[in-house]
Image (tube, rainbow, N blue to C red; front, side, top):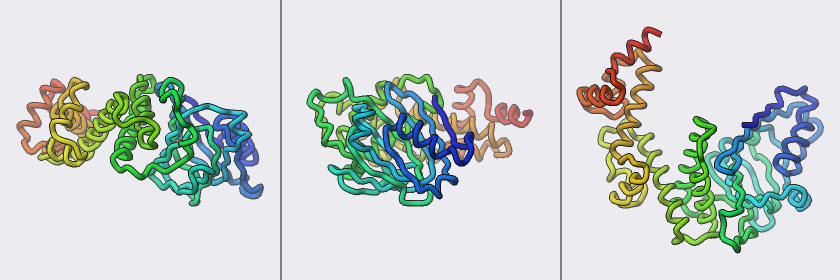
Length: 320
């Protein structure tokens, strides 16, 4: 994993270093900032490999960015880029894609080797994640890169949901385990992004597999978000996703764990976390917070999973 912060440099060196090393050599872009504003510039950057792609995160003071024909010629990469605005908002302009604004939580998709202009439109500055996926071997032979000028992901709410859930799962997996094998997840994300931009066929085998993967991540998100509801059911999750209950259960089959077992594992893991991190909470309150409406059931399944009772976990936490 590569990490960098301008805090390690003297103020008058920060922007020049960022301009040459981070912008020009790493991102392949040209950046500019008024001379009188450079003294106050700050930036942080991290990048890690993820399934043959690079997942990077950046926070930086505002400045102007251009990806010019000269930049592309000097540093071409033939990659699919999925941008997630994690804070603030940024303005984009490209010759083929027009102008748009990406706001916090929104996504944009583009091909790396097409020109664009961008800049933050708030004092928050740059705050984003980028997944850069090499397209070799992933796209159709006649892949039309010119159709992938930077554009906001907004037209299809379903695909937006699936890409958002899949992206979040990839970020979580690579954060928790940098050595995790993410090739499959990255491949599915690339297919979903190309599907959202109309660059691959919706009915292809790869597209169907990517959709199933995205729906699974979205279903897991709902379970994690709503596990505290005792009546959380397959009917509710399937209805939220706009699929049938049968389709929902099929999503979990390749994982080797059913819908109900996945939900139970999430509830137990959250209960264990609360018992350890907040020992002042009563066991009953922990059980209710995690979606258990029966204390006896909570004790039974907890002991079966961990070989000890919730009170044993609390006692160990109190002892520390």
